[in-house]
Length: 288
Image (tube, rainbow, N blue to C red; front, side, top):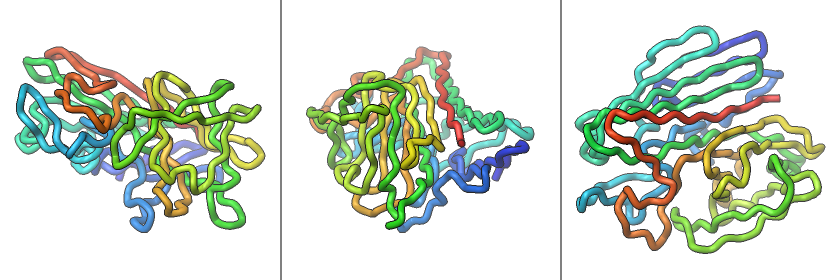
């Protein structure tokens, strides 16, 4: 466990999965602690896939490869490259085992940097092949909610960085559907959260519908704000479990559509790198 610390906050990151495990400050813990009764993770890194592939297989150059939801990086041990009081970097590289299910050589470096009450997470993906590489990457941080008198997330809101209606892509059985539904925001650009919000799974907001969303309390005061430059993001809590947390998930990529039958290169939002190329992405979390 690697610790970042300043006068205001203490952050803990596990080398297993390079997973953010704890953020403490202002007299409280902000991160979900991974109780398997609801969900046994805290903030897994999604790589080299975000979400599921149809029938748990994908195709590359005519061959089928097995792949579980969200890829394998979250279940692997990273090497600590460097660390100081407020910054740490972790590295994962391809192995013969990963190449059996993902036929690309890669280097993934994840850096966490704490400044005051803001944590920046940077992803750097390098293609170490002599051919084009395809991948997705995303975040899945789970934030503890301020619960109401009934012990539920009711009374919390999700606040967007702009006014007006939003459109969520329908999702079921782990796959994206070809339909959408409207998410109406109030005059404060918020929509109310409650347990039934996630009865059908994750809410997926595509096509750059926001670059900053905040978890706010019943007075509409933000206590966690996530900023990102990804083209889409998800909002999730476990279905029908009355969980005490909410995930805000910036994604470069997403699950397959239910009717998708193409190759990895044809997946929507899929990233690609030429031989020797590198990709950089990031998101930021402000804790208040």
